Every structure is written in structure tokens, then in C-alpha cells.
Image 1: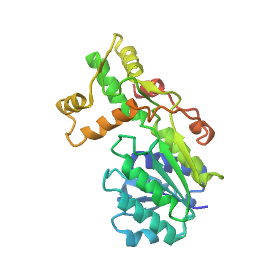
Image 2: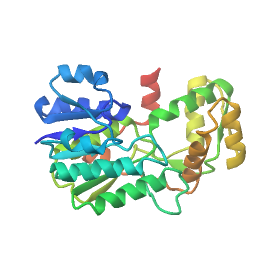
Image 3: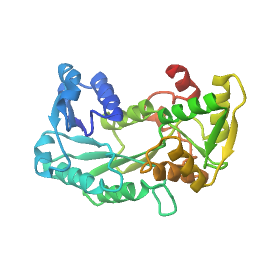
Image 4: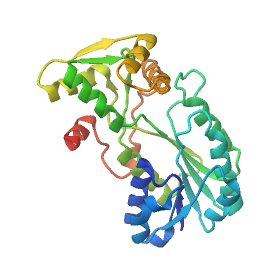
Length: 284
């Protein structure tokens, strides 16, 4: 069985590639990337690395030759990535790929204010209509990305948020990679949608408590509305174009769209999900 990973030189893609190489014969692993030089180590380990660009769909079919299962990692071109995803799915069908696994988000519904919802909802629909076997991995927000927030709160003594009393089941990239590898190498996942989460739903108060432990002093939670939170992010140095995305994530948390906790990391990924506190210790 040959499996392929798109975006394999990205942070999640590399983790999936490493897990596949530890599980499968390296000859069965195909890694797709715009820049094969970034995966030279994986080539040395026996993986097949192929140059692939969703903006050149005519070449994608050849890139997927001999592949049975493909992990389609959503690209970072928020707002314009659906056409690239469409090209990858169509190329997979033409190349004879049997099963496509896609990385989405929890509850990509019309009432979810996250700005990434339209892209994911559209791609999920493309997959369902493709005629291919599919599995959708709805990964929660990455726990790894909360570390700077906790560190800044520990340094300043204040944690600014627009999440209200909501909570998110933050999950590490490594745990998401384990689930993806489990689906790619396992059986019985066709037609399934999995929420991939950490072990608990974490609120702003919980984040502040982690920051307080790190700082050795109390950390105050400062709750802001969306407009004030966006202004604070930009004033703190965040590029203005990025602020709406982070604000929308907070709004999604506030509405309970990211609070569901599942056992998918354990049952499919084969590992105990990593709590934020453990991730902080690793980072330290």
C-alpha cells in the first residue's frame, strides 16, 4: 500500500511523514512538496519525494502515480485555497488514488464565525462529491500555537482574550499527525469524520493559570470584545492582515464551536493526547 502526503515539508506534514516512515516500508511513502530540497533527509531515509504544486494541476496526476491513499493537508492560502484543493482531489481521482484524507476544522457550519470555515466546508463537499473514499479529520486549534500566548501572559501578568467563558480542546500537531498516520495505515475509516482534540477543553482562565504557574505570580484574565482584541493584537505587533483570523478563532471558542473533547487521538492515533501543561514543560 502506497500513501502520499501533500504539503509534506510543512510542520504537520513532516510529523506525518516521520510517523509513516516508522510504520511502513519507506518505499511505500510518497511525499509531495513544492521544494523537494526541504525533505532531503526523508529522501535519504527511503521515501519518494516529488515536486508538486496545486497551481500546476496538469503535473499533479503524475505526482500521484501509484498512490492508493493520500493525505490532503489544507494549505495556508486562507480564502483562496479551495481551487488548489479541488485540483488535488481531481488529480487524485485521475491518478487512481482510492482514498483521500483531509485536514479540516470542527463544526465548519454557517454559524461558526471562524474565517477558515468557508474553505473547509467547500473542500469537505468536494470530497463527498468526488466519488473517492474519504475521511475528514477535523483538527482542533493547535496547542503548539498557544505557547506564545501563555509566555506573554506570564511575562506581563495579564492574558488578553475575546473568548469569553468559552473553551477549546487544543490539540498538538504531533497528536494530529498520529491520527492522520493511523487513518492512512489503518482500515475502516472510509466515510468517517473525526474530531481530533486534546484531552480537555481549556478556557482563558485555564491558560492564565498555566501562565501563573510559569511566572510564579497571579495572571489576570482581561476579557475584550472583538474590536478591542483586534486593536490590541495589531498594537502588539501582529500584522494587521492576520488579526481577523485570530479574532474569529476567539469568537468561535466563545460560541462553543471548539469545546468538544473526543478520544480519537487515543483510539486512532494510538497515543495519550498531550495536555497543554506537558507541552509547556517540553518547550521549557
